Structures are given as structure tokens and as C-alpha cells.
Image 1 (cartoon, helix red, strand yellow):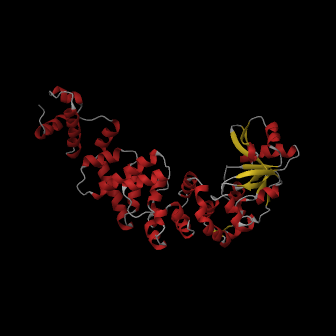
Image 2 (cartoon, rainbow, N blue to C red):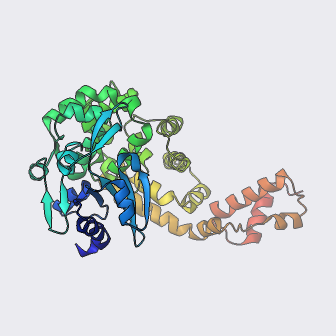
Length: 407
């Protein structure tokens, strides 16, 4: 445990001053699953004021909930006082809490596998909720009454699916039943941004499509996306079957867009806006649709391909499009692009460096005045250079004069 010496120091300091202190939650689960994590939260019997007094650098990030950020050697740790949540009003977070014991603190948490503590000084797991047993069973199970846990925080419905997706665990039947019954209560308690955060985490796991199918069965998907209300499970399975081939760094919109049958670019952009995704994701989805059009048009000119390859998003787009190519043809698909890219390399590099072969000064020297026409001729000169694979400026100008009046 030496690699977590700063967190251990916090626990040691609190313990030496007579308080109980443990690592809490997700880190303990991951530790027992032998999945290393640096994301350590600490729970303690010390009050927020005591925590602030014992450590030099602290930030009260959630003092009404007993949470203090402790900074040791520039590493940050959330240190929270043991508490029980007395009252929930908005279906997301408690409005009233009371400081409590470790056992009571465990009982307020969401799932048994997240409700354990670990004492780094004694190398001992403290388990009041049978979390270890459910880890062995590979089971996502609510602590206590699953209906009550969900009513406290509606986001737990999606989080249960995410954890099941991450660890390939089953969801406890009673928890499944509770999610099914409360699915329609997801909104407005949960902001769409929080749903997006959970979805984004799911895309990092190898079975995102399974998570979507589970959410469909639990009636969550149709609440988030009403257009999917009448889509049956088999249809959804067919839509998602190539999703597992997507590059792991594909933006979320690429995954979510697969839920819908042949969305247009405008519909995909509207989906981005509904999910409140970034302008960067909107920019990406536009470029992806443009890339798909390039592939569908058999008459696409080399100039268009060079512009495509010169874009920093092109490689990711190619792998997303390639994921839908039948496996026997996929190798040929990528080989074809590699060959064409190799042939167009001088032109691609020129586009990337923004150094056109024919410049405005070249055309001005030929008598073209600065004007809209000059801009159009520059564009045509670049097209001629790439489409005819010409690297000599005079050859390009000669071709330009054949097709356009330079007077």
C-alpha cells in the first residue's frame, strides 16, 4: 500500500488523534477485484472542523455534507465524515444529513459492492453490507430496500447498469424490478448531463451495446430517448451489432447515434444538442457524415480525398466507417485507403501546412486583380494540382489557362 502513502498518511493522522478512518467505496471494490485504482475516498468519524484543523491544506468542497478536500503533496483526497442521509426531496441528493457511525454510513450507500471500507493500517476490509459476498457472486445488489435506494437517487438506475456493464456482473432481480418500476421517474430528477456522464463512462468498457440492451429491457432507454419506445429488442440488437468494432476513443455521439435507424446529419446534430454535447462532438459528427458521403460517391475526386486525409479527424472516422464493413472486406478497405493516402502524401502535406502550389501573387503576376474571381481560381488551381497529380507550378498554371479565362 506504499503507493498510496498520502492517503495512508491521512488515515494514520486521524487514527493517531483518536478517530476512525477508512478508505471507502469504489476503491475498496476495485482493490478486492484486483483492479488497481488511485481514486481513493476516505471516510472518518472526525468532524469537518476537526479535519480542517488536523491538515494544513484543505478545501471545504461539500461541508454541508461533511466533505473536505485534503491536499497532501499536491494529491487531493475527499475526506468525508461518516453520515446518514435523513431526507431526500429531489430524487438526486439528500437535503438533510446527520453525522453517524461507519456502519450507518455504509447503509446509506447505493450498492453492496460499493459499501465496504478498508483499513490500510491493519490491511483489513470492513464489510457491514455483505459486499464481498456479492462481489464473489458477481452481483449488483442494492443496500437495503432497492426501491428506497432508487427514490433517494434516480441516477442509481443507470449506475447499476453501468457497473454491470463494466464488470460483466448480473443485476439482482429485486433491483431489476425496482429499476423497471421507477424508470419513468428518471426525469426531471436527473439532469441529462449526468446521464451523458454515465454513458461516456460506459463507452470505455468493451460491452457498451450490452448496457444499451439492458437499459432497453429495463425501460430506461425509451425514457431517455422517446423515439425508441416502439423499437423491439431484436431490432436494437441488429442496429448495435457493429458497435463493438468502434475504436475505444470514438466520441459518445457515434455510439448513441447507432441506436437510431439511419439518422440524417441534421438528426444527429439535434441528438447532440438534446444531450448537450460539446461543439467539438458536433463538429466531429458533421465530419463523419461528410466522410460517409465521400465513401458513397464513387466519383469522388482526389482533391476531396486529400482534404479528407489532411484533417486530423480522418483516421478515427475511417476506423468508425471501417467497423461497419463486413469482416472479409475490412482488410481490403484499409489497404485501399493506405495506398491512396500514400499516393496523395505530397498534396496532403501541402494542405496540412497551408502552402498551396499556386499563390495569389502568381495569379496577380498574370494580371488577375484581387477579387472573388482570384479566390475561385486559386481553388481551381489546387484542385487541378491534386486531381492531375501535378507538382510543378507552371504545369498547373498551364492547365488552369486551358479551362479558365485569366484575363
